[in-house]
Length: 289
Image (cartoon, rainbow, N blue to C red; front, side, top):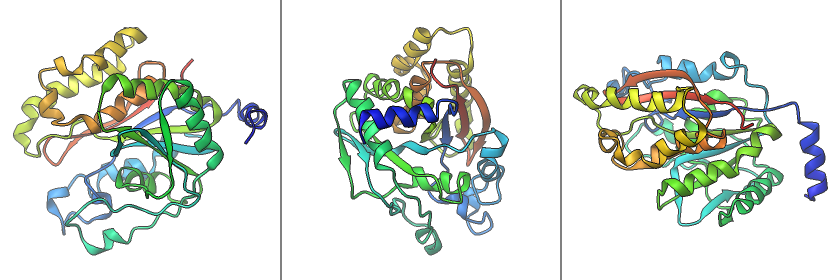
């Protein structure tokens, strides 16, 4: 698509500004399982409050129909940032040991090559090397929560990978580069978990302090953009971080979302500990100014 045509479409959607959203994506396909059959996933099962929150997410949070979803999941990491450019998506059942029916879940969304190319344009303009990926399916960090949020599967999806370096500064650049999308009626979604370490209730001894820290970083309106950015860059100084996130791939999508908003304060839409000390949070960030 030519730059002229893209700018025309952008003007047509100028009044359709989208927020940036972070969703905790459940434990594998737990949102499609009965807690009676899998009691360890109670609280993240199909009848849980967490599942109901996702099902009513659009109406509860007054999300206008977006042109497309651009999703960054904890479960896709590459050496170079990759953009999924499939016309039609398969699903990648990247989990193991679950009931057979969870490997037949369907969510027949399409892609949107124009939006994918716009994503690539923005990333490259931000100095980020990227390439197209046409074979990989959407992983469970994408389809497990979003099948509940957008069950009609009528909104195109473009998935963007994380970097396997897990370097925070590089991922903040990705978020910053994608900030214009929310002004173009594209809903940017990060998918991970607010904590991803340990399952026992005893873990709340470190999980509660970590919750207090991350909620303060995200929602404290007194922080300037530069102060909030510094909090993310210095995350390794947080004493409880290594317990909350033995590896940082589930945390990085939160940082990307914040960066995409211009490091503005977020609204905490939902927050609940499940399966011990998994912090199941949902955040809404305003569009970058």
